[in-house]
Amino acid sequence: MPASTLLECSTAVAAPQFQGTWQAGAAPMGSPSIPNWQILPRCTVRFEKCQGGFKMHCSCDDEVACGALQNLCRMLSDGLCSVCCCQNGVCVCQCNLTCGRCKCETTKDGCCITCTTGDKECCDILQACCDCLAKCCQSGCCCYVCFNNTPVCCGTC
Image (cartoon, rainbow, N blue to C red):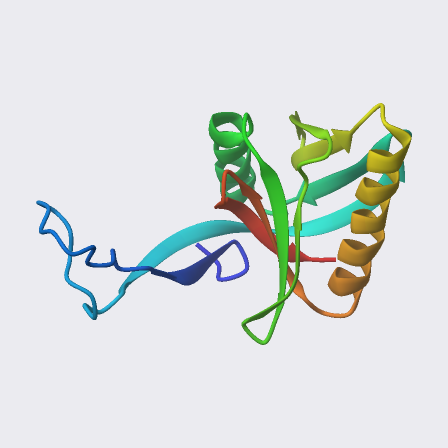
């Protein structure tokens, strides 16, 4: 599988804190974090304003990555949608799209996530997020699209 198809990412899992009483499964304070590795489909991300909010288009060049993206979206898309933009491994911007309803539809080369609302103020917030995410992406950031804080894809413009 070519390197351009899938990308590995790592996040640290926070160790449970000791609360004064011992519980089965709890680790004492100061125990090391365990790295958590996940392989994500790499895609091209495009942001576009629409009536009531905005759309994110995630498209993959590779059939395997496209299938992985569509399966992840199908399984996870019922929860909170968020996007994190990173530059040199550091989070530059994170948008939690809580003020609208996000739905994911599969396309021939990936998926389209539409986040909309009927409220004017919330629409303004969603469209401001769209502008911010598009600028980060155009500036070279890597965007991680997540459902329920689980990344489903990563990519650039």
